[in-house]
Amino acid sequence: MVLRIEDKKAIVAEVAEVAGRSLSAVAAEYRGLTVSELTELRSNARKIGVYMRVVRNTLARRALQDTPFSCMQEILVGPLVLAFSQEDPGAAARLIRDFAKDHEKLVVRALSVGGKLLSPKDINVLANLPTREQALATLMSVMIAPITQFVRTLAEPHAKLTRTVAAVRDQKQVA
Image 1 (cartoon, rainbow, N blue to C red):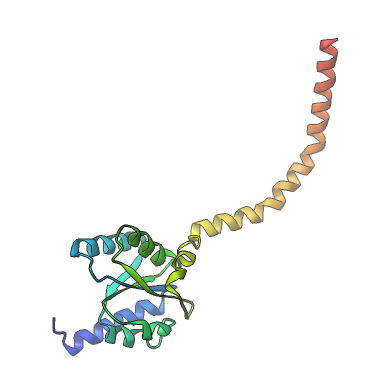
Image 2: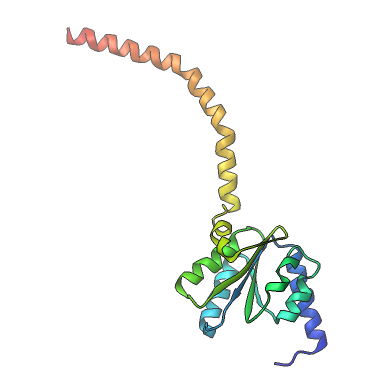
Protein backbone atom coordinates (compact mmCIF):
# COMPACT_ATOMS: atom_id res chain seq x y z
CA MET A 1 0.00 0.00 0.00
CA VAL A 2 1.45 3.33 -1.04
CA LEU A 3 1.25 6.08 1.54
CA ARG A 4 1.28 9.73 0.66
CA ILE A 5 3.68 12.01 2.51
CA GLU A 6 0.79 13.56 4.46
CA ASP A 7 -0.33 10.12 5.63
CA LYS A 8 3.20 9.25 6.70
CA LYS A 9 3.51 12.49 8.66
CA ALA A 10 0.18 11.81 10.35
CA ILE A 11 1.26 8.30 11.35
CA VAL A 12 4.59 9.55 12.72
CA ALA A 13 2.86 12.32 14.66
CA GLU A 14 0.26 9.94 16.11
CA VAL A 15 2.80 7.32 17.21
CA ALA A 16 5.15 10.00 18.60
CA GLU A 17 2.32 11.57 20.59
CA VAL A 18 1.27 8.19 22.06
CA ALA A 19 4.87 7.22 22.78
CA GLY A 20 5.48 10.55 24.52
CA ARG A 21 2.79 9.85 27.10
CA SER A 22 3.28 6.08 27.47
CA LEU A 23 4.94 4.30 30.37
CA SER A 24 6.35 1.29 28.53
CA ALA A 25 6.59 -0.17 25.05
CA VAL A 26 6.89 -3.64 23.58
CA ALA A 27 7.93 -4.48 20.03
CA ALA A 28 6.93 -7.97 18.87
CA GLU A 29 7.40 -9.74 15.57
CA TYR A 30 4.10 -10.99 14.23
CA ARG A 31 5.35 -12.93 11.20
CA GLY A 32 3.15 -15.98 10.62
CA LEU A 33 0.08 -14.77 12.50
CA THR A 34 -3.21 -14.78 10.62
CA VAL A 35 -5.37 -11.71 10.20
CA SER A 36 -7.93 -13.10 12.66
CA GLU A 37 -5.20 -13.66 15.27
CA LEU A 38 -3.94 -10.10 14.85
CA THR A 39 -7.50 -8.83 15.10
CA GLU A 40 -7.94 -10.79 18.33
CA LEU A 41 -4.69 -9.30 19.69
CA ARG A 42 -5.83 -5.78 18.83
CA SER A 43 -9.22 -6.39 20.42
CA ASN A 44 -7.57 -7.59 23.62
CA ALA A 45 -5.32 -4.52 23.57
CA ARG A 46 -8.28 -2.16 23.28
CA LYS A 47 -10.00 -3.83 26.23
CA ILE A 48 -7.07 -3.18 28.58
CA GLY A 49 -6.10 0.27 27.31
CA VAL A 50 -2.98 -0.63 25.32
CA TYR A 51 -2.27 1.33 22.13
CA MET A 52 -1.16 -1.09 19.44
CA ARG A 53 0.01 -0.21 15.96
CA VAL A 54 1.73 -1.90 13.03
CA VAL A 55 3.97 0.77 11.53
CA ARG A 56 6.69 0.65 8.93
CA ASN A 57 10.03 0.54 10.66
CA THR A 58 11.31 3.74 9.06
CA LEU A 59 8.23 5.61 10.25
CA ALA A 60 8.48 4.01 13.70
CA ARG A 61 12.12 5.11 14.00
CA ARG A 62 11.13 8.69 13.21
CA ALA A 63 8.20 8.57 15.62
CA LEU A 64 10.32 7.23 18.49
CA GLN A 65 13.21 9.61 17.84
CA ASP A 66 12.52 12.23 20.54
CA THR A 67 10.63 10.02 23.00
CA PRO A 68 11.74 7.91 25.97
CA PHE A 69 11.64 4.92 23.61
CA SER A 70 14.34 6.15 21.23
CA CYS A 71 16.54 3.32 22.59
CA MET A 72 14.38 0.88 20.58
CA GLN A 73 15.30 2.34 17.18
CA GLU A 74 18.05 -0.17 16.36
CA ILE A 75 15.81 -3.12 17.21
CA LEU A 76 13.09 -2.15 14.72
CA VAL A 77 13.76 -4.73 12.00
CA GLY A 78 11.22 -6.97 10.33
CA PRO A 79 7.44 -7.02 10.65
CA LEU A 80 6.78 -5.59 14.10
CA VAL A 81 3.76 -4.54 16.09
CA LEU A 82 4.32 -1.80 18.66
CA ALA A 83 2.34 -1.90 21.90
CA PHE A 84 2.37 1.07 24.29
CA SER A 85 1.15 0.92 27.89
CA GLN A 86 -0.47 4.22 28.73
CA GLU A 87 -1.79 3.72 32.27
CA ASP A 88 -0.22 0.54 33.65
CA PRO A 89 3.48 -0.07 32.89
CA GLY A 90 3.03 -3.84 32.64
CA ALA A 91 -0.17 -3.93 30.57
CA ALA A 92 1.45 -4.25 27.13
CA ALA A 93 3.94 -6.83 28.39
CA ARG A 94 1.14 -8.89 29.97
CA LEU A 95 -0.87 -8.70 26.77
CA ILE A 96 1.99 -9.82 24.52
CA ARG A 97 3.21 -12.49 26.97
CA ASP A 98 -0.25 -14.01 27.42
CA PHE A 99 -1.02 -13.92 23.70
CA ALA A 100 2.37 -15.46 22.84
CA LYS A 101 1.61 -18.42 25.13
CA ASP A 102 -1.13 -19.52 22.73
CA HIS A 103 0.50 -18.22 19.53
CA GLU A 104 4.21 -19.06 19.43
CA LYS A 105 4.67 -17.12 16.20
CA LEU A 106 4.39 -13.86 18.16
CA VAL A 107 7.95 -13.19 19.34
CA VAL A 108 9.04 -10.34 21.60
CA ARG A 109 11.92 -8.36 20.09
CA ALA A 110 12.29 -5.39 22.45
CA LEU A 111 10.99 -3.90 25.68
CA SER A 112 11.49 -0.40 26.97
CA VAL A 113 10.58 1.22 30.27
CA GLY A 114 11.71 4.63 31.45
CA GLY A 115 14.04 5.16 28.50
CA LYS A 116 15.90 1.89 29.09
CA LEU A 117 16.01 -0.97 26.64
CA LEU A 118 15.33 -4.35 28.24
CA SER A 119 16.06 -7.82 26.94
CA PRO A 120 13.12 -9.73 25.47
CA LYS A 121 13.71 -12.28 28.23
CA ASP A 122 12.67 -9.63 30.77
CA ILE A 123 9.06 -9.65 29.60
CA ASN A 124 7.99 -11.63 32.67
CA VAL A 125 9.59 -9.06 34.97
CA LEU A 126 7.68 -6.24 33.29
CA ALA A 127 4.46 -8.26 32.98
CA ASN A 128 4.50 -9.18 36.66
CA LEU A 129 4.52 -5.57 37.81
CA PRO A 130 1.40 -4.90 39.86
CA THR A 131 -1.44 -2.94 38.36
CA ARG A 132 -2.28 0.47 39.79
CA GLU A 133 -5.09 -0.99 41.89
CA GLN A 134 -2.85 -3.77 43.24
CA ALA A 135 -0.11 -1.30 44.12
CA LEU A 136 -2.57 0.99 45.91
CA ALA A 137 -4.03 -1.95 47.84
CA THR A 138 -0.55 -3.02 48.93
CA LEU A 139 0.32 0.52 49.95
CA MET A 140 -2.88 0.87 51.95
CA SER A 141 -2.31 -2.44 53.75
CA VAL A 142 1.21 -1.33 54.67
CA MET A 143 -0.08 2.02 55.90
CA ILE A 144 -2.91 0.54 57.97
CA ALA A 145 -0.84 -2.29 59.55
CA PRO A 146 0.67 -0.19 62.40
CA ILE A 147 -2.72 1.26 63.32
CA THR A 148 -4.31 -2.19 63.31
CA GLN A 149 -1.55 -3.57 65.52
CA PHE A 150 -1.92 -0.61 67.91
CA VAL A 151 -5.67 -1.21 68.24
CA ARG A 152 -5.08 -4.92 68.91
CA THR A 153 -2.51 -4.06 71.57
CA LEU A 154 -4.94 -1.68 73.28
CA ALA A 155 -7.74 -4.26 73.18
CA GLU A 156 -5.61 -7.15 74.49
CA PRO A 157 -5.75 -6.38 78.27
CA HIS A 158 -9.56 -6.36 78.17
CA ALA A 159 -9.65 -9.56 76.14
CA LYS A 160 -7.18 -11.26 78.49
CA LEU A 161 -9.28 -10.27 81.53
CA THR A 162 -12.39 -11.64 79.83
CA ARG A 163 -10.66 -14.94 79.04
CA THR A 164 -9.38 -15.22 82.63
CA VAL A 165 -12.85 -14.61 84.12
CA ALA A 166 -14.33 -17.17 81.70
CA ALA A 167 -11.69 -19.73 82.70
CA VAL A 168 -12.41 -19.19 86.42
CA ARG A 169 -16.17 -19.54 85.73
CA ASP A 170 -15.59 -22.79 83.83
CA GLN A 171 -13.46 -24.18 86.69
CA LYS A 172 -16.15 -23.40 89.24
CA GLN A 173 -18.84 -25.02 87.11
CA VAL A 174 -16.79 -28.22 86.77
CA ALA A 175 -16.12 -28.42 90.54
